[in-house]
Length: 500
Image (cartoon, rainbow, N blue to C red):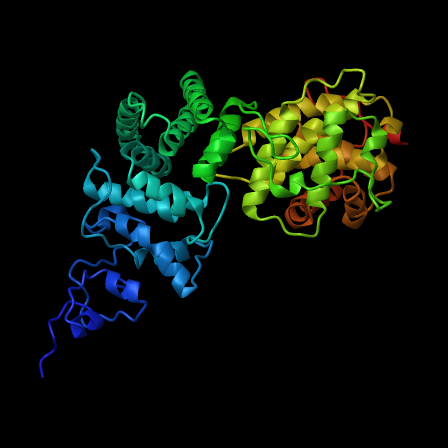
């Protein structure tokens, strides 16, 4: 008997039903949740490597992306953080005979390559980081919007194109073309009242702001941020935006903060009231500033600014709780806390008995939250460096060790040493940390950790980076005195003599 030439799957052939030849399962088999076996490979399927868009099949993967989270959830599969595993996953799922994504002025194969690049790499480096494609918000929420909105589709391809062309170092011809078309499409949308304030429009504008900021076009970036702020205000605030798109409500304030260097939106109050950035549920939970743990430092006794003291106490209740924060909750907490802290006025009023300590905590806790957040696609290095520069003089101006408890001093220096990695200020922070550790007879990481846990600590996301930094400090043999002379510019006074 000769081998069959049938292209349809066995299930569709047996039922004498038309088969759309999708791989790895046709639509009918997906809907019926049954096995889908092909006697012959469908003519339209492909196994081209996704790493090189020049070898990709002429069929796009737009329809595939709409259905693959569902396929994964049914099969119980997850995607590894390893790039090669991710590539293997997408290689097995490229198929769309209809070319249903918005048209562009780029070659067909190039568009496919950029789509793959976004879905297999970029989407898994955005915030909140989520390596599971069945729950990653940029796959499940952002991408469906992009497939139905030409402006957002062009902006999305632009992020992938910039990343690709930056690595190949052969200029940015496709990125520039996509930028031109993105701006043109957005202008047409904004002129239409029914389209100007959509989630997809805000997503596109805020990403353009980040792209222009990365290029050094700060004026254009600020213009985009001001535009998206007007859109949010028209919608009734970020809490209203969150009702239709939680991802947009996260993206807009976070990117606006990173590119502008200062908060651009207000927050809700401690009880979830208001139209600003939403507080996570744990923040709204009742709490007492009086801890039952005698090992914890009493922030109320430090004479801090009352508004700052409220933030610190609530934050410590959340981070010290044994319940594990999800990646999304941690991102939301970081965004909310940074907007609260960076929006505080200078701590020089009569209510702040220790303005220097209050200033130190305001900047250091902001830096600590960025450390916990970790690196994301749009870097927060610039704003972290700014916080370190603002933080260092206040820490060096503390008049005596009595004004800054020993554990708090070690915590402040530790945060400064980690946050300033790669910056000029790092030498000073590490040197002061080494001097204080000698004066206090702190000899190992366990001794340091005991002090850090008295202040503010998140075990899961803090330990490794802080332990490594202190390991280097103990092994560095930094000079314990005269650190100001080690740099050409003036440094704050060091603590070693005060501690001794």
